[in-house]
Length: 74
Image (tube, rainbow, N blue to C red; front, side, top):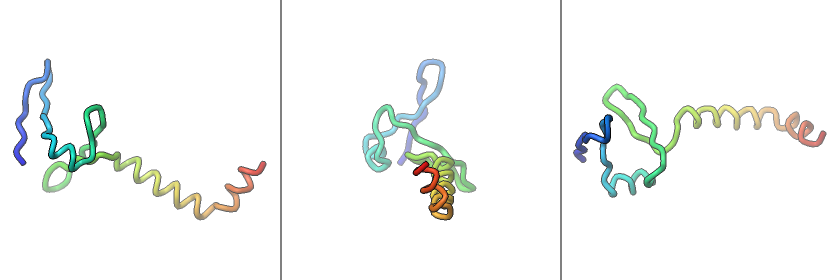
């Protein structure tokens, strides 16, 4: 899919076709995150850093389930 860079005010931007928005499951006003990969740039509808932090939190919650339950009860 070829995208064209266009002028938006004093900045430059890319207009994403409806088909691409649908495939990314995003709409106007949503955020996209870009990650630089060895072979290019990847656009994602989620923040990979937040995803990494949530995986760590889930691991801590599993490992410390009893302690967290006691804290919640007090």
